[in-house]
Amino acid sequence: MAVSYKDLGLVNTREMFKKAMAGKYAVPAYNFNNMEQLQAIITACVETQSPVILQVSSGARKYANQTMLRFMGQGAVEMMKEMAAAKGLKQIPIALHLDHGDTFELCKSCIDTGFSSVMIDGSHHSYEENVALTKKVVEYAHKFDVTVEGELGVLAGIEDDVVASESTYTHPEEVIDFVQRTGVDSLAISIGTSHGANKFKPAQCTKNKDGVFIPPPLKFEILAEIEKKLPGFSIVLHGSSSVPQEAVKIINENGGALKDTIGIPEEQLRKAAASAVCKVNIDSDGRLWMTAAIRKTFNDKPEEFDPRKYLGPARDALVEMYKKKNVDVLGSAGGA
Ligand code: G3H
Ligand code: 13P
Ligand code: ZN
Image 1 (cartoon, rainbow, N blue to C red):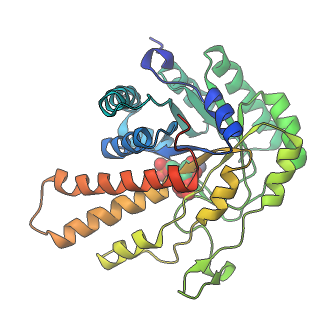
Image 2 (cartoon, rainbow, N blue to C red; image 1 turned 45 degrees about the vertical axis):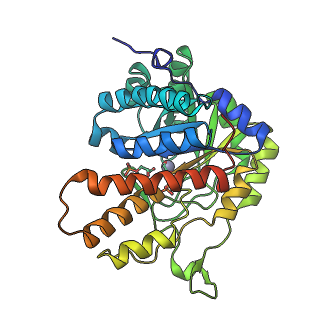
Image 3 (cartoon, protein in one colour; image 1 turned 45 degrees about the horizontal axis):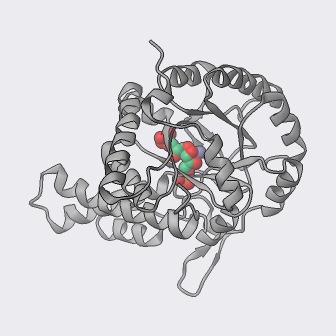
């Protein structure tokens, strides 16, 4: 039987994006795969009074089971209500979003089981195929007031199972036609971000005095052209982890072997968040902090074998990270 997200206490992204556009901030879209990540996201977003988009990738769906994830989405709403009441804070809007949906059937299945927003990523198809697929998803989703994100342009790196070695930047001349013909509610664009913890090759970067790689700037000129063509339209930035070197250092000092890790500098994300970018996707930074905390506990306390003893500190590290993102980077704190 079909389940409506409205009965689960979730919201779609329409109102969130309207407020983010007016308030010149971006709504965080955090990926989750397990309970501790979800608890950390909700805790941080209630405490900073930020709206939030909980993202489920196809990989997460396979790992954690779609029905389980939907119940976790519903559980997140209940946890949020309880926490807000206990702290005397306002309730925050929560959307449950399919990240990088690649087929109509997958999007439909998420819509039918309580997701409030879906992404149909047709960016690896030809332009006309992307239009046709995205339009089909929008027509179905809008019957249930579910919002849809489309994508134009390809990000370098891995997008679920699709690997692209080079970015294909979004062509601004295509955006009006794409948005008009598909009816999407938001558009993911490619302006130099990419997925994962190795977003740039060292050869593409300069080094600062501390030996930290400084990547080339994002293509803000493309974003500006898109904004000019679609005034007031919600833009989405994928691949927006900053890859904190502090977390990488803890990982490598505790048995890890990460190399050439380079992310998007926070000041570039701040600049994007103040523009038409209303949604910023972050997954890798959570993975890094979680791994750092777990590796450190394993090293410091080799006698521990209770998962709560290493997942607990990992969850605490995530809460701090998400709060910092909301307050210092995306500007979404207080936007609920
Ligand atoms: O877009 C990529 C997200 O980080 C999801 O990654 O497919 O490994 O869950 P995943
Ligand atoms: P990061 O790998 O930069 O965290 O990007 C995540 C993302 O775009 C999920 O869709
Ligand atoms: Zn993505």
